[in-house]
Length: 268
Image (cartoon, rainbow, N blue to C red; front, side):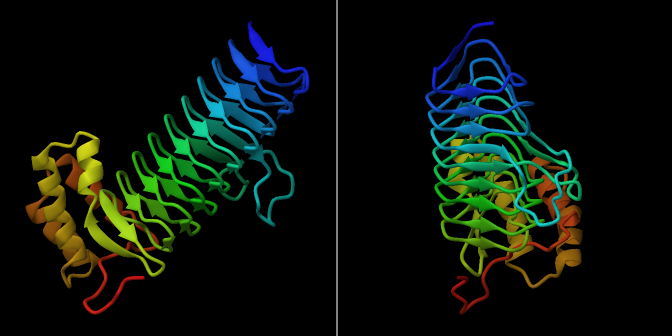
């Protein structure tokens, strides 16, 4: 095993470090932490608890990974944080472990970017290839699906979901589910339509984007209630993989989902 640990760093004997791990000055890694091959831990960063990091992650200075959940119900019971590969946790980013009530585990996938001062609360589930811009925060028990973006200084309420390829605009307050493939913005948030630019950048073909747009209009811009919208989607739009994903997301929504702003409303 090869590793590079700065003399001022503190690595508990109970920690497990893989091949080619670099630990910078004054960083602290606690017992029970597992750090995968090729991971770099910056100066003054701290990793604690029952925390597993996969391969080739970057933990930048002053990030705090794997600390106790910020939940008054937490009484010291064992809980976990599981992180995949090739994630970046920038300066002052904080990621908390899970709670017994929430299933005991916070999970993060692969290839995510968490910018400065972002926060992932206890028991949250984050997919892969997401971007959290500066100050974006998740309360506990939040689900963020693959390829979503959380805008700067936005907050997502407990038990809400952010769908795949969703874009949450800066300074937004998400108190219901944010639809997949859509842009959602505002302190009183509204769906502003399909995240066309984001989908194009991810390589979605034009015909797929058009199918998504037609389906989203049925859901967000009509006066149909959820049951009626789902019936129309299943009758006239189902069978396309992305539309089917949209239908499944809406059908499984427990908190309801954010629609377009009403006419005359500023949606913020």
